[in-house]
Length: 178
Image 1 (cartoon, rainbow, N blue to C red):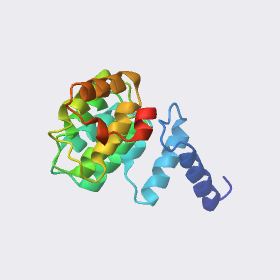
Image 2 (cartoon, rainbow, N blue to C red; image 1 turned 30 degrees about the vertical axis):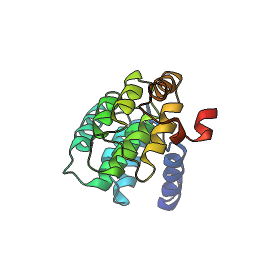
Image 3 (tube, rainbow, N blue to C red; image 1 turned 180 degrees about the horizontal axis):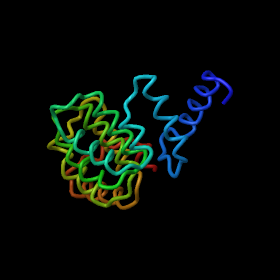
Image 4 (spheres, helix red, strand yellow; image 1 turned 60 degrees about the horizontal axis):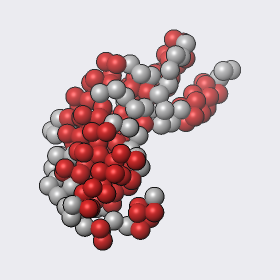
């Protein structure tokens, strides 16, 4: 790019194009330029490294989000990014987060789960439905949507309804039609 302004515009557009996806196999010079740009904005290198698919960053983020005492806004950000890039080993940590005392953390975990296909997710949501997923701040509504997003999970939801563990009346019509 001919100037720093052009470089910033180019990198900003590049990052926007990859929003919600993993950035793979970049030339080292581009990776360095993106890292420098992120630092100039004061943004977290860990998020960029997760998007770049660096396993050490993914491991660090998984440990961070599992820590209830860690900074909540950063935890929420990492949960979202790990879900967007479908990072390996994320599902068990997300499932454990359903036991968090924070409704915001539970919501973020549920929203990230929708990006995965792991059969354990449907079982985990259904088994925690009445214990750690209260009907507050649309938490159960999000759980319904996640369960309805995959056929095996929807089947598990139907089994719970058929066994009267989840009331049919609480499942919204749009979820039923899905």
